[in-house]
Length: 134
Image (cartoon, rainbow, N blue to C red; front, side, top):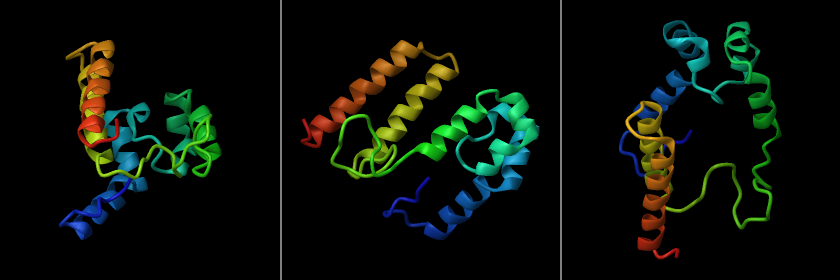
């Protein structure tokens, strides 16, 4: 999670991030929506919570992946950037939003997974081409 450098509401954004990643919010989300639907990757303590472990049999695998992620060597082949799931270009945030919207549409049943992935890839390609990366 990050706060864009360009935001005009840094203090409010920081308060939101602190709340959205707090133990209290994780507990509220677990009780309200079910433990398997709590935000993943926000707190290491979630992966030790018995309620979460019971609801999310994949919890151990995810915890292991998070703990073994190496931001200095993030991919199978060498890349010219540092980081796990972040590319330091101005378009990254917009691409993330578009891809997230496509995935949300697939998860809600508004479109097929294949359609969402195809549209996300097309939008990403357009953005990269317009920015001069292709």
